[in-house]
Image 1 (cartoon, rainbow, N blue to C red):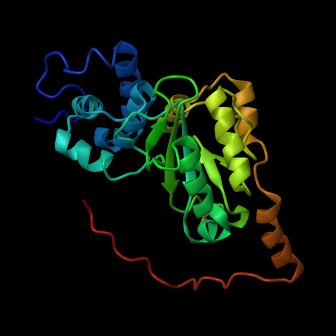
Image 2 (image 1 turned 120 degrees about the vertical axis):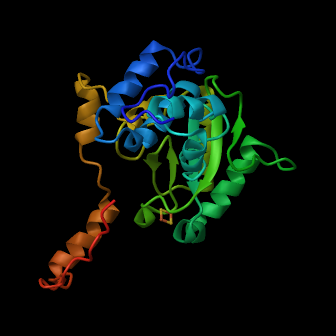
Length: 257
Ligand code: FES
């Protein structure tokens, strides 16, 4: 059944040719060629599927299985494990509110609840991974609560399409989603300018705009926050260092596969 170099298992016309055309197949092949074993390209291919469909449909999973010579069950096991793969159509934007411990204590829970009611209503708040608006249309927004987004020093934080908006309040979060619903793209606190969920999914797949100098300037530019650097500065001022790792600790044996 399997096709070690990728490609439809068993030959014949792929079942997903309508949704995923020749260009997508060519991009999938290019991604697969970057790995010694084709199955290692599953995560990028699932992002590629999301960049086309805005989520991972059953057809999307079939596409990945066909391209990689995997069973649909193997693809489904991965696609349903990671929260970055959406099983329902996402909006133009994905808004992720951190409700993990530190953000929650600093107001993240309140921000999430306020956005649920603001994007839905008091009596019918928007649920986790529900969409305000119509997926595929400008200004549509999927709302989710997220685990630690690795910016605890800037809590409470939220992300739009994985770009950071730091030090949020209930009101600033409402202003932000209102701007998104109008079709605006406010600049994140740091990092690259805002685009949309599907565009970001192409980048996560590994399809980067190599000739776009502006993109690379944004991505490579300074993105550290003052709050984050403050800890490093304090440590330097006080001569704090991390304990050195013992040099003679042997690495554990790793079983060959
Ligand atoms: S708890 Fe929210 S970023 Fe860590």
